[in-house]
Image 1 (cartoon, protein in one colour):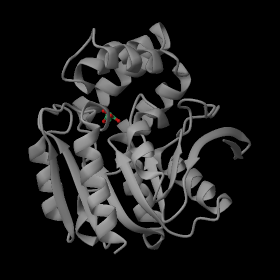
Image 2 (cartoon, protein in one colour):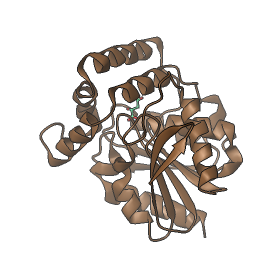
Image 3 (cartoon, rainbow, N blue to C red):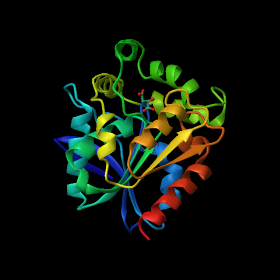
Image 4 (cartoon, rainbow, N blue to C red):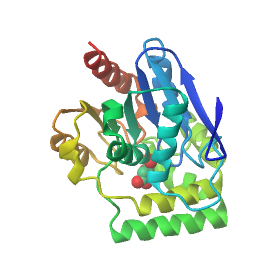
Length: 261
Ligand code: MLT
């Protein structure tokens, strides 16, 4: 489905009916990374999975944007769809956007799922690496992101069917959208302090072999949130939701059934 937000074409997938669940994808992906979760949830929930600004079929902004800007757009999308409350699920970069949403509209979210994400801001070295990534994206296009990210996203690495599917998705992204998101992530706010103020019941999902957001960081994050449980996905690198969808779906459906019981 397409809508217009701030004059820009914006895509979102919407399926099923019931309590709303908003799924926010990671970098450099789009709503399709959630395909296995959308299929598992649509019979009981209203699942909304947008392409964040500049990703997938949502056209990039002409100016630089921040993650706060992405969060503002999502609040407008929820208004347009007349969703008063939703469970908020953010994967990696989507988790950073989720932290912005919680700062702006905490009462709008009655549950939180943080998958393979982290609360801290980038240190200087991380910021510099994002600048280098932005430069490579401008020079080489989205292939720069697929080359750098696929070995970290997937434990099988290049050559598998899943790797070539993800590679095709990344290579179809707008380079400008990926540049904007890289810079937005480099200057994101630190969300470590606010973890202790999160009111919503929370599920934290980590991947046993995730090198981007390792289990130690995920467990610490879960320990800092008052009402959080931690679920570790065995044998998975960063992209848990595609590598082991059965384990992830079980953790999510158990969490949602408990939340709505
Ligand atoms: C993601 O999966 O969204 C990225 O790994 C996040 C990041 O680069 O910090």
